Image (tube, rainbow, N blue to C red; front, side, top):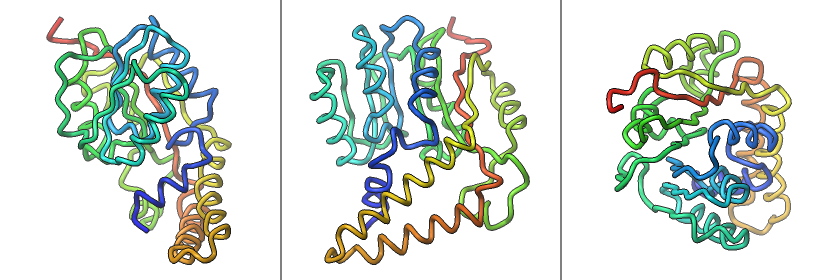
Length: 248
């Protein structure tokens, strides 16, 4: 069982692959898509959860998603067809960092996928390359709510605190026009859902050769969360505009 398979099972019962609930996702999309007819791009779209929600609620929207997971993209296509939005969705099976578009986008998303580009600021640089003048970026990344243990840093990465994270974004030429800090309830619900879904799959498939590994992984990840980073890790999602766009 590889990392993609584990992620697929773990996220099966959660709205998106990030610690936000449906209400938070809906509010952020409303702020990021004020007109409702924007050209929208998701870099690292996974199963297209953000795009599918946006398309279903905004009949004038057209969207594109990029991801390396063929199975996730197949899920996105299937759901788009069920929702009747498939004609307004284009999916690209390739690395997000290699994607080249013919036209710029009014909104570029990358939530929970900054590792693809090597961090938050490189993700914003990638987003800017696809952004139309006056466009917006919706980006989500981790931060440390309090000083982490060395073990927590090894597990999740070397984040800054929230204020420093926002300061770095502003210094890079962006202005936050909205944002959301995931609540403790959202963070806990995400972790319980992920590792509970993986454990449930293992218990429901005892004869599968990957069952024991899946159950062990769920137990390990749940323990890492509860004992390693639960009290220190936070997640922020920002709606950003360029403070000064040289192309205007």
